[in-house]
Length: 149
Length: 65
Length: 262
Image 1 (spheres, each protein chain N blue to C red):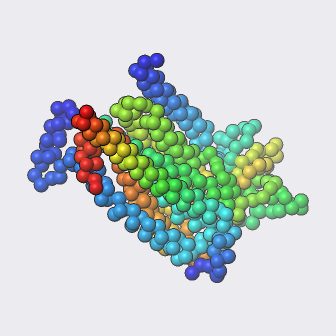
Image 2 (tube, rainbow over the protein chains, first blue to last red; image 1 turned 45 degrees about the vertical axis):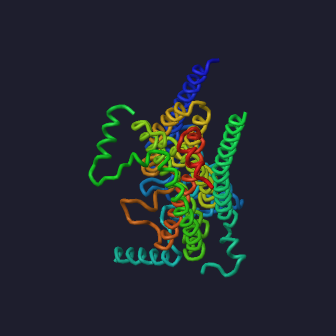
């Protein structure tokens, strides 16, 4: 093989690899760009039917319950407009807490219960020492009581 | 100071494996990169000096004969 | 050099009081300059890493929600920043090389790639180790993580392509195409958390809003980021000198430089 041909093949291969990866990327993004659906999107039937998908939102305060078997947990995911009840069998991540973000993968059953196969905690981008977090909590509670009065 | 003891420090509030796993691999990568670039540079230098010595010697032989 | 580029370079060198940047584009000027710069970045890097690690582990308090697992941020965020900045720098040098036909630009780009790839790997690695205890998963295919993985493949693809081609001038140009086209991925990585639903949280530090971190935590992270900058510059300068020696081995300036060595 002449060196000129080898060069051309290499360049052709490089361009082909680039094109292939770009195609893969775009198609993967098309499917995965929506990493999760909000409960409102599910209510509007925007979420896929009859296959697993992810829902994301906040764990509703006071909704987390452990079943008698000690493994199954039920909780409610809310985006403040709509809510979905979730049932999950397995260990929860450390940051799974009421009032905090959650992303869970699973399927809706006939009764509208979301049967989860995976639960991930979604945390925010705020970092602060515990004393500061406590102060923020107190301030929010104070504000709430002012509003209620 | 955040830690009551060394044991506390290594334990990292139960996340020791994750935290130290991150920092250890970073350290290994940085160390390996430093060693590798220095070796790359000195390797080039040694090769060039060897080639030059060889050509100088070659030229010397030519003038002798 | 074609005539228009020549005209630009003449204009630049004729600018009153201006620096002739093209002087530094010549390898024989840049090689000794780089040599003098290396310790000026290497030693500060060491010092900044030491101070940064001290602040990260002994001064910065634990985080209210994540506990001490958040301490991974001090290496994760600087690594992710470097992975993106170095790719942009690579694309910048390649573009410069394509426009002005300066061979030093391509050598700079090739010297940057391995360091960028290492930072990208570290961003992914530390991210996985941080994701497991906090999110509950080592890896998810959300837009942020996926685009960062693509960045790693772009670095590796660039390096493989350049290494595979025998003719360095052609390798320069083929690599430049990958570097410049791939640069589009960098803003995608950066804005992915804003544009799409991701598991990855948003930016804690941005130019448009106040930082969302306690100031001492932010301080530790910024010192570590500065350390990563200084380290990367030092390592890349050593590597670019090695690449220069290899590619310019048959030139007069290398011969002269060897002559002047004791």
